[in-house]
Image (cartoon, rainbow, N blue to C red):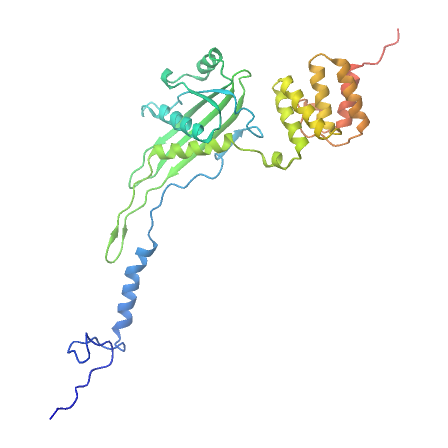
Length: 330
């Protein structure tokens, strides 16, 4: 005769029905507490991820000089070791070399020549060397602040960069950039510990500098991008006009006129080129064409400051008057 059937408590049962070992039912007061504890233990593991130095997406923080776009990608460019604090040897070489590698990778210039074997040269010495080698541009720089961080303090590197026209001795690009890399502190959790990370190395910060510099050298003005095709050609010609490269300037102005024969800006600039080359008769003929177009657009950028704010027609009239002064009574 079988005895009475043993009652199994409700709740989570054991390995098989009737097993003597069972979990207590969910109505116990400490079960929610255990669930919350398990949630807190798993939550940090789901949110921790390695933090790296962010990729620079902007230009250097302080850009003091830059053209509307890089017209000189085919130029012969010499790059020299940067000036750097004497307490950290080799930093100037490393900064220049990292920039050199990034410029090659991005194709900022097609003919780039590292002159690192010379050691540091001051700007005048480097300029004289560039003239001997027939370089068009010279890249120099300065590491003005250098601090290697640790687990407790950030790293920091401040750099300045100059890209100078060898012929005119004028800086075409000049900027200063600051990079700071913070350490990642050690995190303590209930059941485990996540080790922190030291601050990024100064070399990593220099690489961030180099990426920003490449962005600056490849930057194109948003205003330039919005121009119609004939005005872009006129803007390119104006750049070479300022450099007194009249052959290239004339080529761009003529191309702009082919696209739009009524482009008063390109016509006026073509007259300026003819006048600069001594062909006053052709210049006068072009200025008359500009006047006949009756374009009253106000000029906001010119290489003659006192002409700024005048219309294109007024500038053409003044240029023509200068070529043909009124006859004086005898």
